[in-house]
Structures are given as structure tokens and as C-alpha cells.
Amino acid sequence: MPSPASGPSLPPGRETINSSEGLAGELEPSSGAVPEGYLIRRATRDDLPEVIRLNRENLPENYSEDFFEDVLESNPDSFLVAEGDGGRLVGYIMCRVEVGFPLVGRSPITRKGHVISIAVDPGHRRRGLGTALMTEGMRALRARGCSEVYLEVRVSNEPAISLYRRLGFRPVRRIPGYYRDGEDAFVMARSLRP
Image 1 (cartoon, rainbow, N blue to C red):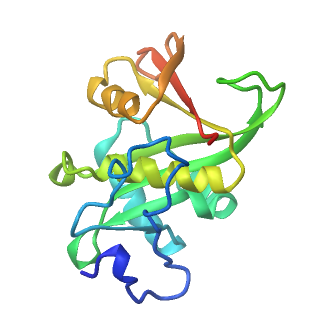
Image 2 (image 1 turned 120 degrees about the horizontal axis):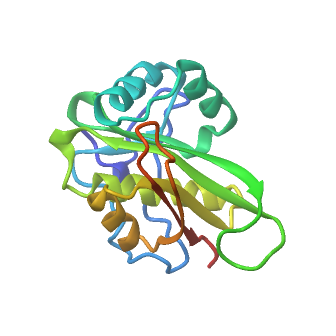
């Protein structure tokens, strides 16, 4: 499979993501590099069955097909997928842009990114793919004018919390009983400003 830097030839609507563009020094240059053998690109409607499979097989929080379609339609630049060798989808990140009160900073109302869902197949974890998906998702959100980004994470999900901390996220509040099974969530956020 061609590397993202070599500019693989993809059908229209399957643009690759340029991971060489930084977040204005907010992340270490190598922290978001797409691992060799993988390609991160914008999701297409044809990807949704595989994205839904990844969601159902890897996460306890699942969404309806309509929800995935709505997020893709309204946020095509920040709904990304990761392909492994052979073009099989092995991960995704689904983000949207919202307007509301800031979680970081002091502005009265802000444009912020929300990482709704991220998943990587177990056989492709611990290779930097989650970091690359998060980095590319944040770049896409910043390009859409977001000044901050936030997400929710189970308080027991220590590997995810550790990843988000390495990427500059900090807990801003705890939501009791956020998940269907009653577990609490941390809301974690970080600035996207240069």
C-alpha cells in the first residue's frame, strides 16, 4: 500500500489526510505520524457499514445507522477512517463541530470540536494508530475553526485516558452515571489554539 506521503491515487471523495501539517507546535512533530502500512482518509458513505462494524465490535456505546449518516453528512472533514493493508478499515474517528460555552479558555461562546467516537481493531492497537487518528481529527476540527476539542471517556478506561493525556487533554469534569450501565464519564478537553 502506498504511504500517505506518496499521494496514493484514490477515487473522488477518498482524499488522503496530510499528516505533515502540525497543530502549530501543540503536538510533538512525530506524535501524530500515520504508522507505516496504514492510510488515514476522510470517510465516505460506502465506509459506513465497516465503521458501524468497528463500533459494534469494539465499543460498548453504539449508535444508530442514521446517527453515523448524519454525522458524516454534516461533518465530512472530521469523520476519518484508517485503512490497513488491502484497504480494510481498521479504525475510525468520528468528530463534529458544536457551538457553546467553552470548556477551556474564557470566551463567552466558542466553536468547539467533539470527538464522539474512536475505535481501532484490537489487532491494530499499540502501533500509534489511535494517536494518529486523534491527531488528524484535531487537525480537521481546527481547520473548521474550532478553538478547543473535548470528549467523554469511561473513568475505568485507563488506556484511553492515558492516550488523551499524552495528547494534551485534561479532565474538566466528571459526569455521574453517564453510561447506560451506570459508569461515570470524565469530560476531557484541550485547546486547539496555536
